[in-house]
Image 1 (cartoon, rainbow, N blue to C red):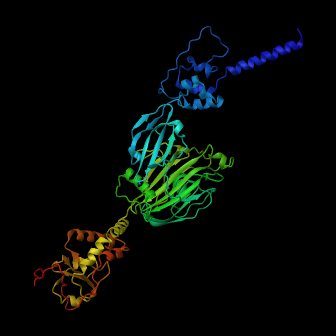
Image 2 (cartoon, rainbow, N blue to C red; image 1 turned 45 degrees about the vertical axis):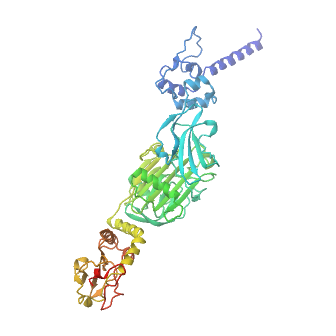
Image 3 (cartoon, rainbow, N blue to C red; image 1 turned 135 degrees about the vertical axis):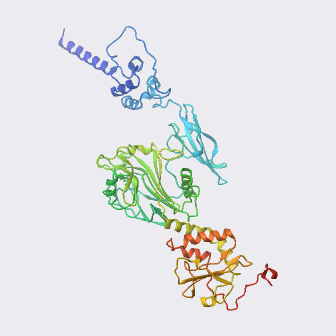
Length: 588
């Protein structure tokens, strides 16, 4: 036998051996281990031959007769044996889902062969929070949510199942109709995914900050009263690193402390609110960045502020909560800073979208954190701190998550009705002085038109006060009553009419060192026989001018219910006639 022939045979035998070994290799042995743990009978099924022949000892054995056992699992009828195992096998076999045996037996849901369960509202509802029924779709269908804007300005939602070829899953594509309404439709293909996005969308454009890492952003002034744990804040400054500060921001090289003491060190005596405080980067990311919105009730278009207000009403049952100011910071499609990979590449597999809302009615204040359901896959470097939380007045922090558990932020919630990825916190501390100041402002807003005009008309028929107390002593229509202003000392003397006049008014006057007091809080105004008006004015005075409050808004009360300034007084003053009062009623 010639030597070349022997060499050729050896080569062919080696090639045959290598080919046989590759043909009998597992798609992924670790995947086989995971599936075997879930399905102990794995190696007696057809999956042993198609996915795990080596693991199941099927290689190089040709038994005379093979019996295939049907796959029976303890999982749901349409679930994967192990989804991570499916992902591993797909890396070895990209066409995994085209293999009917593997897709049907091991990776049915992973391969999109299961029907999805969707929230279903076939008729228009005002809010998706009202949509609680579910339905199971056909395999060829996806979940959808449709926001409908009718030309008559009405607005509502529909939700349910829709054929996949009519909508693109996860892309939030818009479909616009031009018949009787405009509709925005978005689709998704996971169970119960067709609720509104967790992150709120606003009609206003807002300010966008992009292509920045740790740069300092200019501060925003807050034009309305915004209390935070009992103290008013007047400025806020956002940071790309996942937080806003309510005065000035901490140094850029600090990241959120992961416990109370570390947090206090990191905030550096600043009040910080952080949905996720870590090293975030938006550089070179085309559609990424941070958006800032500032809403107040002074704005003509109330649509955006009402969207926030409706959520507070739903989650807190505070139906009297009327938003005066809301600060919103939204991070979209950003990633973590990495020295190894540029942001525009890193964001493809590590992305983050989240939102922070600070909202107040000038008395109660809430923080809302929203975390996107899909764009929440960042993995910060091990040496970089990660924390979500907020600062108290003493600069201690309430820590909501750290680097070990922040991934749960978009999977859980603390609101009812529950919406994964949404969290609400009450940061209200109301002092007596603050409460009265806020109520005084409300008193003024509610009464500076109708009640003010009514009082001005009524005071035209009231007896005026004498300018000097010596003149008051000569007027027997008044009687002394120092209890009208009991806390002003013995130098204050007060008088009131003996009876209500025919007009339902009893004039009252107070003097300090014999001089008429015409400015609150020392002054006193006329009393009205109308009990409703009298009670309302007494409450307003206590909120705006009583000694127990700051009295900085006492001028508001005076504008509505002014005390007499004696400008109409004459020594021979008489009760002015009025056309609708008969002479007999005046005692004539």
